[in-house]
Image (cartoon, rainbow, N blue to C red; front, top):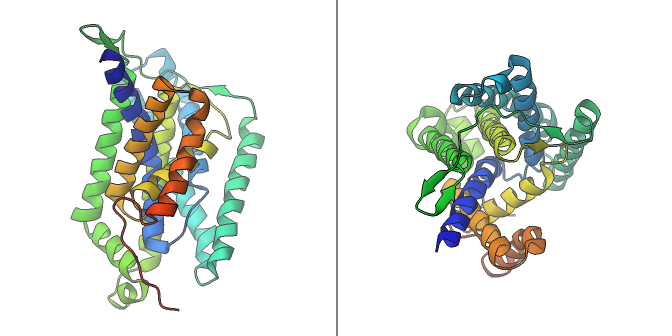
Length: 300
C-alpha cells in the first residue's frame, strides 16, 4: 500500500508538469485550430532562463521559496515574450494560408529553437541550481515523500486555477472564448482578435516556462533537447483529454503521469515513452474527440 501511494505522489507530480505544458497546446488549438509544435521548446527555454536568472542573483547560495517564485516569474515573463514573438512573426503572416503551411512552419520553429539552444547554451547537459531545498522528507508513518514533488504539484494546481479564473472570470477570458467560437463574428463585435490570439500564446508560453523551472527543481539536469519528449507527451495529454478543452488537458495530463508511473513501478521502465504514443493511437482509433472533446462540423 505504501508503495502504491508513493507511485501516486510521483505520478501526480509528473502529470502536473505535463498539464502546464498541455494547456498551451489546447488553448492555441482552441483558438486557431493549430498544433504549436514549438511549445515544448518554449518549455526548454523556460528552464534555461530560470537557470541563468538563478546564477545571476546567486539564489543557490541562499535557497528559499521566495527565490523559487522570483525565478519562476522571470521565466514566465521571458517565455511569454517568446510566445508573442513566435505568434507575431511565424504564425500570424500565415493566418489565411493552408493548414499544411502552418504545420510545417510550426515544425520549423521547433527545430530553430532546438538548434539555436544548442548554439547558445551548448549541447552538454547543465545543472539547474537548487534554489529551494526543503530539509529531509515528509514522513507519514513508514511513507516518506519528497517535499519537492508535493510543492511542484501544489504550485502547478495554483497556476492552473489562476488560468481557469482568467478564462472564465475576466474580460480577456470572455474574448478568448468568443474568438475560439468564431473569429469573424468576434471581430464584428469589436473584439481585437489579433491581440487576443497574442495573449493566448503568451499565457500558454508562460505556463510552459513555469513548468521548465519546476522540472529543473526536481530533476536538476537540463539541456537544449529536453523539450522534445515532454512536449510530445503533453500533446498526447491534450488529445487524450479532448484538445481544445482546458479541463480535459489537465485530466489527460494527470492520467498520463499516473499511467507512466505505474508502468515503471509495476512492469518495465523501458516502455515508459512508448506508453504515450500507444495511448495516442488508441484515442485516435476509438475516441478521436478525447475524453471531454466534442465533434465539430466543418463546411467545405
